[in-house]
Image (cartoon, rainbow over all chains, first blue to last red):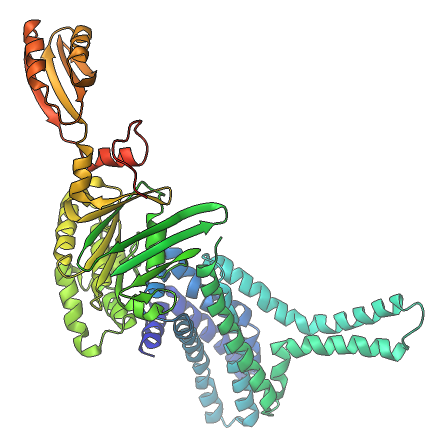
Length: 262
Length: 319
């Protein structure tokens, strides 16, 4: 616990000893405020749409946040300190993850100013917004876990960032690709099925199933419920599980690398 | 205190460490000697738990580094080849962080950090950024880091590399002081360093132990054959011919010749003193001897002998 805390504090401080922490906060505040201000000029304030918009920027913001977590330690040789002191690998991973997540929460918290302004101007702040916040933070948690895992795979933070960006763009495209993949499956089945073993309805159903499956694993589709104010247990459990899964994978990557024989 | 049994490490087809076994007793300073790429760093990385061995067992004070890593690591202070320093922290912040990692209780933390900084003389840079420190200071911060948490074992990988001569002497003295109440393994490719600090030496080459001995024994072994240097005024070729027929002299070679003055070395059989015979031989030919002295064999010679770079190794090899 004490060790996790020590790593957590060092990591969080490190964000503000390099420009990264400030740059991230600056970009986030600037873009979100711009969005808010433009809306405000049109006598319209919708924090939920602002958050959705900012979520679209996760694919650049989160990689910047996570790229150096493990890659930098490995490059500079400081990881040897972590691995030769009486600290367990899960402690290291959790400490670093929580530090990145905290900075993300700080970034998110800056939008509360916009909420305050909205309240002052008698705009609507309701449970839908709360749901959007929950969705925003949970998906941030997932993205950060993935970013941290990718950082543990390389000693080059630029590569870590680029790979993360590509994967996150993949998530965004996944929704669009999902129905394409479904149609593709149906078409293939139709072409293969020259004996007419399957009815057209079955082939279409197979395609739909593929679409559904792809959407099911896509964290982005899990957020729709939140922004409509519905708090279902499944998506919450799903997103937390994905986060934990990637943290577990990070631990495995780090251990494997040290135990590998090549 | 430290026991290494049949340790091997393969990287694919490359064998970095090949069946290495040795023990280090409590309070001992063991020198770990070998050319670059001999497997010193790999061995140290394994025994500190940074990487795994392909086979073999390492125990620190009875705790297996794989079975009980936390217990074993608690007993080790490690200074890797490149000190693991965060350049964005001050020395004080860094040492506090390391103290937390090692689970030093908050009550004794300040005192322990102050003590470590005093031992390696870095108190004056406590509040400077590590990134702005010179190499010598960084190295010392690295040693201070290893000392935190009062580990019984210190593993120092090339602690004096890249330092200037004054710093090297300082660090050596520090290590010798630390040796009074720590068990130390110290790696080096500088031989005088090892003979100056260590009680025992393990010589490793291409991943294998080629010698394991007291420093004194190793020195003795290298004296098995003696080399003398001789400066004479006279014709080089004839002097060499004359010397070669003196009983007890194995060989003679000219080092340099200038203005009729020849400097040469000759090798004698073990435990034979031929200086008198050489004197009369030279005197008979009226070639005045200007200087003669024995060349003290160093660990360097031993090292060359045991690593097989010399044709006639005298001592038996110990593996």
